[in-house]
Length: 267
Image (cartoon, rainbow, N blue to C red):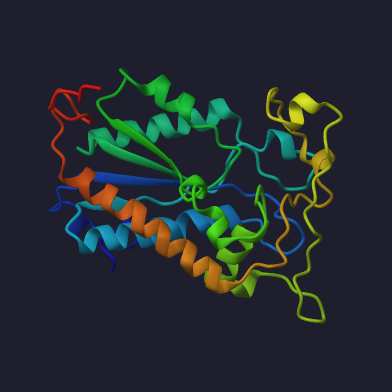
């Protein structure tokens, strides 16, 4: 039994544990180019959650990892078969119900550990603020290393590219598809450009239809991915996120939580 993982834990243990923090991983079931499994986001969310919670538990955090939600918002991937969609409002309701359950169980610090770019969860935090006793924290783990991404990877990764493929090679390599020559069975993940400069430069946003944006749902070149890069990615995630989870577990909920009591520094 790993006592930081709810699915493996018995009631005999749980009823004696004053958990302070619950981590809820969120994934998706969708195509990832031609070489990665449909459950890539689910595997990522689960593995990242397990490793972060294990390390935090070992440092004294009273933390529990919940089962990963395997479905996410896929409204712009519906042209691909079996991209299993939950509407944003449906996903928000699922999260709200789970938050209510956690509060009933005495847990008021909740981390949403998101692994799917289509899950736009900041509005959920705004919707629930003031409607629940819980304090919600959102971590899109794939953005945590954006400031040092180029130290690890050569190519940008929007979906099934170098970063995700490296993670897969490190933690579920048996599910990464290769051709007869042993190379990744994937295209180069080169997206089609918009005809509008304002969209290309990020001045204007759209919901991108992935069957028009991509060839096989991949957006990012995966061919320089390695397992070593995936392991280093995880090491750096632990370096940045485990201290947060430990501090979150130890921090009392008072009238100023999660902010400090001391006066702001003068300029």
